[in-house]
Amino acid sequence: MNYSLEAIRRCFEGAIPAQIATCAPDGTPNVAYLSQVHYVDSAHVALSFQFFSKTRENVLANPFAMAQVIDPASGTQYQLSLQYLRTETEGPLFEYMKARLAGVASHTGMSKVFVLRGSDVYRVLDIHCAAPSAAECGPAQVSRLPALRACADRLAKCAELGPLLDELLAGLKQHFDIAHAMVLMFDAANQRLYTVASLGYAESGVGSEVALGAGVIGVAAQERTPIRIGFLTGDYAYSRALRESLGEEGEKEIPFPGLAEPHSQLAVPIAVRGQLLGVLYVESEQKLRFTYEDEDALMALAGQLGFAMQLFEQNAECQEDQPDASLAQHAQGAAVAVRRYAADNSVFVDGEYLIKGVAGAILWKLLSDHSQGRSEFTNRELRLDASLRLPDVSDNLEARLILLQRRLAERCPYLRIAKTGRGRFKLVVERPVALADG
Image 1 (cartoon, rainbow, N blue to C red):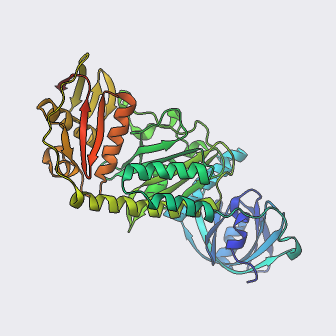
Image 2 (spheres, helix red, strand yellow):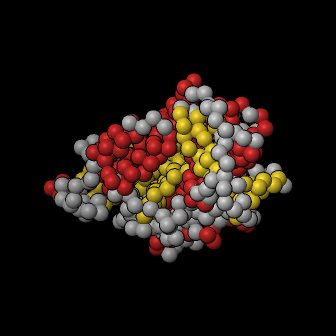
Image 3 (tube, rainbow, N blue to C red):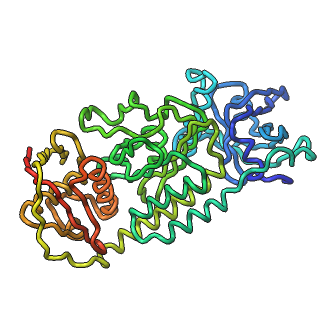
């Protein structure tokens, strides 16, 4: 082939509809429009299968076809000679195309018509350019390698999870010009993801949750694949009206910090050796804001982030300092009422919901021990405390502590978690606390 699929990936963004030509066994040709042509790898594309149409009938009888795609920047037309291989009706590829199709359908007012039945995978036999002289016209595709390198350098200098998350979000803003982003960690025990860091929102949303399989973030986590949408779609939005996935949490819900109407969304899984750790999510009010290049770059960053997270967690125990024997300082001022409900370890401070789950259990332990005169703690003792019923070691304890630390900073500045050494921290209580259980 004179052209590679990588070189014409801009044609697969869906800005201009593609066409497919097939032929019946008796030689009768058929041409139809395609909702989506998806780049799979350097030798394969996937076409959206939505209807039991003549095109479908033809490729099942005669597996060869010709697709025409158009570069939206230059208008250059490319013809792809294809051979049909198989149809996928579930899994990462199907879910990716389903999400993107939902965005296109919503953008064109065809949500009730555009329903993906399957992803038809084709081998690309040849690529022909209709007008080679025009192939270089139009703006050049922006390389994300310099931005990726700059962000990777920032992450490589971090030795702890908190600064790692902060540097990641700062790098996305400075080098990728991304204004809204968040990092969510995976809670395997409850099959949910919880927000630990965010960028660009009025409220950080730290502690807000997304169920596995819900929306762009949940699907990216469930299928361990990036999900990218270029148009506004209610099917994959996170507005307050679409929080059914959180159940009837009522007053225990922390509002999700996402944009009310994101026209572009990109979620990439953070995984190491098949183990899901979390999701990196970015969004924009601009249509078609994120490209294949952005997707590739953020996948690379997510990989580096995942390895760093796992390394920090594995090294935490063997590098921990011993806690100091200092006693808790006497707090002054009006007393704070802290109530814990053991059923889900939800914690309320002066009647306002603060946190629940593992982070809630940790806070309750720290406050209980603090009431007995302790103020210094280590990560190791939390891992070994059977009363906390912590998940297995794959569940990042450091992320739970960061979540708790940031939630306290936002809602209860008189209760602080301050790091005092490797794997060691101090609970600072600046007002008297009245504990009530149940």
